Length: 440
Length: 116
Image (cartoon, rainbow over all chains, first blue to last red; front, side, top):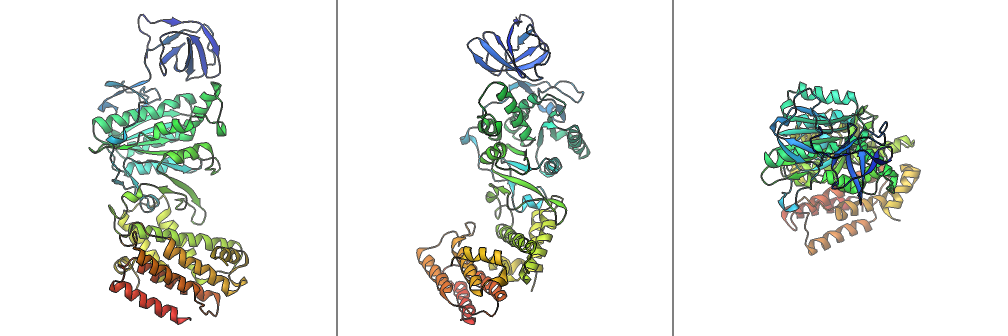
């Protein structure tokens, strides 16, 4: 972004905070971009003639007589098929050494799709992970986050889901990615030979944190281009939304806004909803599915970020380390995909809902038996069997390293049922019992 | 005593630390939970029940809850009630007064008669 001829240059900054600068200027619009001594900034507040700019790189070293030039437009992205296979930074500039993308210029962060133009989601996304496909089936057009502790392999799981999902385009919005994670995604996409389906907008920990505020809007505007104009099914991966919200709080606190719970801005809900509500299923086949990551601090789901996220998204997938089998599993008790009911038993085998419920009920019995064991009580024969079942269920179905199709998941569950339980203990509708029960 | 209170006592004192009566109370509660309160909204038959059918099943369940079954030891209670629950659930999944429904009903009577 270079300065053009006949642009007004302001040279009198009247106030500087750590992330913002204010100056007197006229004819300026909200969200307009500006350059301050070569650094990108964005208009965040206008009161009369006083314009407040949020400086992405921070204001360190900016003098009061810095040259300020307004670009006359909000952040834009140029959309075309050439986006495929490219890596960009938060401003949409290529970081892969390739040329700039030519195409139609679109403002980022527009409104989400009108509900009357939407279709009820009904196409399931098979991930091969039974904790998702069997217990919490996700569908195209859904918005769902992973809730995970920062030390859990959520990026690995998400990359796995992305590679297995049959999406036309996969758009990665990386916010505060470590360089390792960035290279991990890059190598996964390259090794899978899927680069032509991938578009990445990446803000790493080396970039200024405020820049990451642009990443989701960039990713979703690109997604809208492919979903609306090209009628493609687009999968958007956003990692990590907690770091995005942290950047929001930095900006709002620096702007003297009164912080809300957990020092988050009062607009946190709207800020997050503006992003997640872009998930959509169009009647003509195009769709945007959003899979995000919300990292938790110490598993605390009452924190403002996961709490607000939970009200917006259609469920959550909860990662937990199962110490019994030493693997990370998708916790069936705390995970939920609200849209699974639209596909299970309809797009999948008829016994799916009952098998899913029964397995989780028996797993709950196993959890209870475990407490009993830990409290030093004698276990009954039934307790012993549920414990063994729980362990095997966790290993063969809940673990994230599982990769089988849904029918195999159901057969695996049936095998476990008949291995450890009697028919009366399983108590599934007799029609399915007769058909699938593996015992005598 | 309510089923929930019984279950709390069993958890605190252990299976063998409470009278068999506590286990009975707990499992009576479980029968009501599994058969009446948990309705399968994804099952064509169980998702909607006529008033007549509801009355019939509720009375059946209450009858079971009011029966004094005899048990020698606590570990007989769980499997026995699992059978009752399974049978009642299969009734929930069968058309009211159909051949299957009546078959499960007579099986249920056989089970309940075992320990009266």
